[in-house]
Length: 348
Image (cartoon, rainbow, N blue to C red):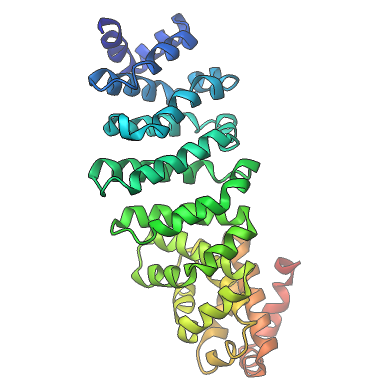
């Protein structure tokens, strides 16, 4: 206990951490610290806190690039697989420590490729779901979802194989009364669905389009980012998703509203989703009399830093005018054909 207290003191300063990194056997140090994380006393949190502070050091992360999967992942997945018998308050800081370690690209990709990890995540999600919504379990779930969002950005076989079951768990969590859980769950879906067409189709069948429209109408910057990305993925992959969106979002007013925002990521995904929905009969004509041509033209010919904004809005505008000649008349009035022609480089 005295040793762990001394280590805790040293870990709290840059100079102290530098000394430890130079002098001690890091493999042995981590091995011994990880033995404490199953304890149900203060030593567990102390050990995790020490590891978390060292995890912020690049030299520490680089040292464990080679043996991360054998040193860190087994005790971590063991904690997640045995949630009913562990101190739940230890898990959020432990997940935070693992998140710091996955700040290293090599470590993150190894974690994302680990089948055992994803199985442990699913087990932990189930354990949180049956814990009567206790605050400790909610804290664990919130931290875990954030971690899963972080490592699911990489395309791996492990994620692809688990995509359908992860999506199923997420869809259940979208009914949570906790806004933070809903936001992070939507974020996870926005990363997972591109890995699997089957998972996307399953999500559409289970009503994800209606959920995303509800979240978009409710607002919130982060939730909006995740929701419109998820909606764009679904409408790109599924005809049913496009038809549902046109049916549920009258005159596509939610998408049009998002096109008015100054957020390029939101605008790009809203334009992508709009362009897909214009293939649905009646969608383009429902926008006659609105300023949609002017709105899309503004973005297509603008100076957005993200070329996806110009590309997606130009495609949507071209499709709009092709499907409904009335919009082409409006485009000519605005001298937009020249602007649209100059945007063709983004469509190629």
